[in-house]
Length: 143
Image (cartoon, rainbow, N blue to C red; front, side, top):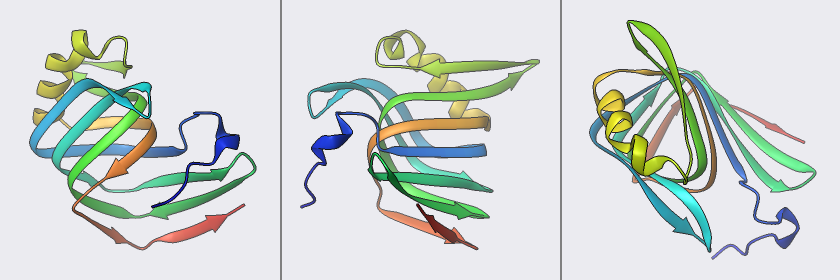
C-alpha cells in the first residue's frame, strides 16, 4: 500500500485532460468522500479517449506525465475534486461538477455523458481505480 505524501496537503494529485471522452455502459456521478475530503465520485463501465494526458503529482515539485494517442479504460471509478467538460446540445455548454453541486447536476451529467461525447475534459482527482487500461502510443515525461 502506498503512503500518502503529507507535503501535498490534501491537494488533488492526478490531472486528466482530453479533447474528447466518450463513456459507455453504466455512468454515474455522486457526492462522496475520499480520505475525509468531499469529492465527486464518477463511475463508468468504460471510457474512450482518442488522445489525452494524465499527470500524476509525486511531490509538490515532481510530476510524471503520460501522453497517449488513445486510451480505453474499463470499470473506472474516479474520486475527483472537480470535473469540467463541454457538451454540445445545439450550443456548447461547459459544466464544472464539484462536490457542492454534484447532486443538482448528476442527472443531467449522467444523461449527457451516456448519450454524447464530452469535449475539453479536465479532471482533478485524488484517486482512480479501473479494471483495465489500454493505451496506444504512450510517451512518459518526468520533472
